[in-house]
Length: 411
Image 1 (tube, rainbow, N blue to C red):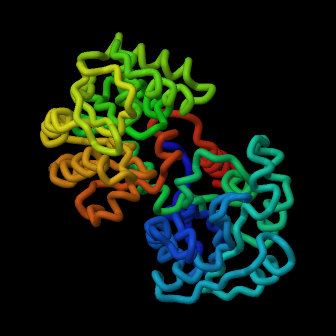
Image 2: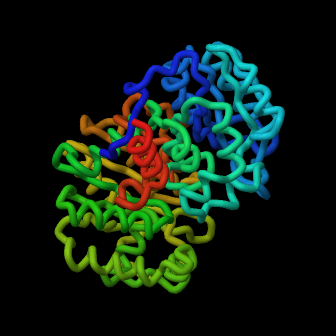
């Protein structure tokens, strides 16, 4: 575990505390209403811990140019409802209105500044070094009116920007409770999972999934790797099964410039760890708008492969039911099409049924678990998405590095 400070190491009652959270949420494109408020619910323990401080919330929603790039006003309103207290929205990030509002706060008050990605530095300085971030306008102005910084934005801990990493370098900084919870649960998946350990990797992000698979396989921490979805299709291809020209072209295009590296990883997994691979044995294709079952022996196909088949799901079931720990990231199918949601839903159901410690790796899979009301049956449903993938692959996490530097500087 990284050597940074947490809220257990400090008393912030009466202090002005900048708190970076990630409450970036799916919104109804017509009404703007929240489709999933789990990220707002995720930060509530930290908000309650800081109830006697002067809390200044920093967050983003989407990015400039996207249809769901909005102000944080509705986020402030909903958070106030969830907490049962007033959360004041300030239509500014680090200008005079924001600074004046912060300086006028009383203990126990909470304000929510506007979308930090509306300030050009938040996105514009993503490739900057820590020293440049520490001296930028956003950091300099906000730090001038604050006593401490809390990073509870695990979902963007793999990012580098003024409000994620820059503030940690100029203020005493602490990990929030959500950050701690995520790191503890995901640390179990990497360092000391209860055995047997089954890892199900799906979705379209084949490069990320294979980074995770190789990290866990090389550590000797995983017993069974189950590739499904596009990841499963890629692994079938790497193991010698031609998928058909269109299906192979889809994988190449989805990986953009990462295909060669990803293909090399797929071949390495097949050649070095075949005994731990549970590959699909049957699939579902779309033919004339209908779901059609085929065996792997029927490949290649000119039709798109959109799901795993019933035989594959029957093989996956004991690997999940008999496990001590299960990590699942990425859907098994093109679940947005009702006829092809079956594989993803069945894996979700068996994950809810098993007595194993189940970790859901964020993104679409996490949202589906919430929508189907299964959160209480899952050991840990990560809010992380890309950050979760980065952590599980043992890649650089700038937010954690910045917290470590802050601890060394201020403790």
